Image: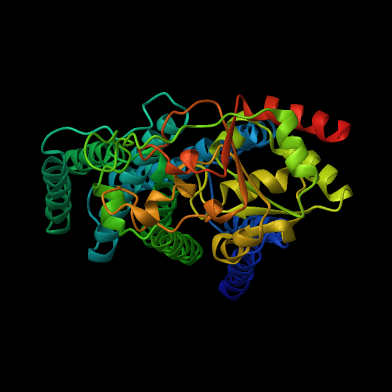
Length: 462
């Protein structure tokens, strides 16, 4: 057991430094693996130090909880497919928020409501924010898992109703801070916060899920930090604030990448099927042209520069390994291959980076939007695999479009564009894609994995 507070403080400081360096390493694909190891080492130090403190008891419950959590974590890490990673991130994030709310309820129960000013404020914040994060993350999980529609789920007066629910929860929190020591008040606060969390995420479409997951992650960090005040744990306070600050910064950066405000993401119900301006293609005589794997293989084999644009369709088809194999074949023929990564492509922050890294695509071939866009005019073939709204020229040319002003990948400036898609169905923005009608664009319809396998065979034969 550790009784010297200086030793405890030093060990916690080492853990905090590990967390800070982990965030730094995770900002680059080259050092991301190292970041995971450093962060994991910091967490081991933090847990071991906490368990070694004087006064820690209930070892049976601690061991049982640790074993159950470890088994779930190991099974999840080893069995969940990369395509389901956004769901797992949302689920694990929600569990953190739920844990914070449960700790707040347990501490209030043990104290019989007799908590000091700082403790009761922290308890209320932990219960409120943690419950919102838990419920919101569960809805995000259900949407990503397609248990709920990925489209916004809205009803008349929804925002007003949501504000009323939130104000009710806040009013109960104020009552607790003012001296009400009834446990049912905290339970009612948690119930209202859970309801608000559900209603908060329901009107958010699948295209905005990366932003929402990041925001909910920030909420979980803030809830954990508030729980640190409840438990008088400096370690938890600092770790929670790191998560909260980084999550909020990432949320702001992604919203900026879409040229939209956080309010528009949260309350704009982006992704409803459009029935007015910008939602339906006007018949101007242009037609969609289909192509074959053999024709595409010829274009790719004789190109000087090819840019692959991955989207959620690539993840659904689990075709990342096949894309890497195709790229390697083209590189053997002297073709320069790069990957264009839009900040919000996929269903979680960095989804495409994670997916391609899992397929061992060299990190220096992954080009962010601002870096790759100037190269499209010199690109012979842009190969769009399952991406839709992030390559729609309407974002630049149609003021009536709901995505107008959103920065996109300028694939329409390439000499030739090949779009691999299962059908002509619109993306999550609910609008048609003008790119499909451009004269340099041809469509290769079918499952992305099957189409790429055919492309590989055709390139080998060319």
